[in-house]
Image (cartoon, rainbow, N blue to C red; front, side):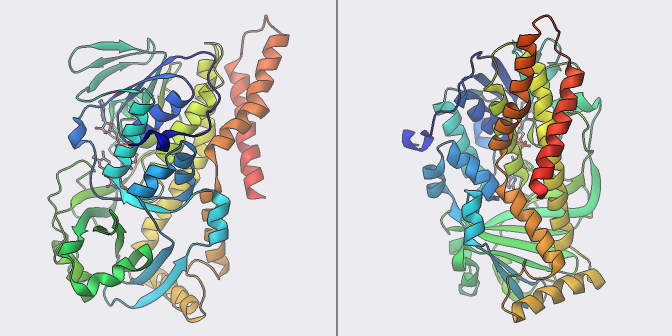
Length: 472
Ligand SMILES: Cc1cc2nc3c(=O)[nH]c(=O)nc-3n(C[C@H](O)[C@H](O)[C@H](O)COP(=O)(O)OP(=O)(O)OC[C@H]3O[C@@H](n4cnc5c(N)ncnc54)[C@H](O)[C@@H]3O)c2cc1C
């Protein structure tokens, strides 16, 4: 990777560099390492797998709120080479192929978000983040499985027996990892939603001629009906198609990282002939059971220096647009807050500030993403008919699929807020409004011990101020 793609305006550097151990080298862990190194902290990433097995070649969609952070980190150039920009969503019926409507992202809206909507693969994104983290001096260790965490000390014990200590531990080891289990004081397998995702790709040379419509305008095709949905989009400079099937979950097993051994044909037999033609050459898929996990009240382990980020803090439905985006935002916010670190006593309060800033944002986005999966997989009854008729009417009137009705406008407005959100600005705002205030108060009253209780009240106030501001 060229060093140019890592160049950006230098961010504020911490006055007190400390040591972070990040447990898990997925998207969340690598993004966090980049963000922390950018502000001058030390970061060790411990990933249990070997590098070759840590990602998949399936598709991943990056919304503007995510690409804007990566651009800000100097990764625009490399992303332009490794990802594709998309502008269009095309809706159709699953079993008949009937065209239901198109949505073209508004240029003005996208410009305001300062990001773009991009399509790439999990592996490409992983590599971009890995290269950037290494270029910035992060220490990334593969084959380093964390078996035990002592959040009080704070230390981790690896499967090899080695014990490592740090000032702060970051749990980025996913929804089934040891960090989440420690904070929850137990396993969280999540509740099956009754839906599963089959995630795979198709090579262009395997495609039949008739499927070329899929490549037009780098569009994302969404076909739904019969309680099932297919999402298809080009990746790898149009050499491949990402192919995701959502539908009933008969087995409630499977997760990302499993071997791709599932056969889509056995579940997607009622699909329209054009899509069936594409599917005739589809590769074996990874089967992911879609689960609804407990909404964690605490992302920071009690009285300790272990904080959760990414899927470990907030598991998202698989294959959705915002899962990786939220993981990347987490790292960006954590680092922004810790760029202001000048004394050790601030560490705990910054961790709680992180939790407060992120929880409200993530809850809103997660709800929307689950809503999207349920919307696509509505059983063919009244609600689905309403969905389809609404789309047909808008297409007939020449309107964008997500514009028009009051309901659609509301959903669209919510999406604009989600895309337009700048998590790093929100972290800066927090510092200006509350962090600095508190520091000044402490310097006036040197004798007073900082009260975490009072501080978390201030944080709650700032969260609601931000929400109020956003809703205006
Ligand atoms: C192999 C894999 C492939 C994926 N492919 C896609 C895809 O194609 N499209 C898509 O949209 N999403 C995909 N995802 C999901 C996507 O990565 C997440 O939705 C999101 O980006 C946030 O990820 P995360 O980093 O928080 O968690 P995860 O992606 O789950 O990463 C957690 C990391 O922690 C590591 N880990 C777990 N336990 C330990 C431990 N004890 N010690 C050290 N390391 C540990 C895991 O090996 C993993 O690398 C995939 C996830 C994985 C793990």
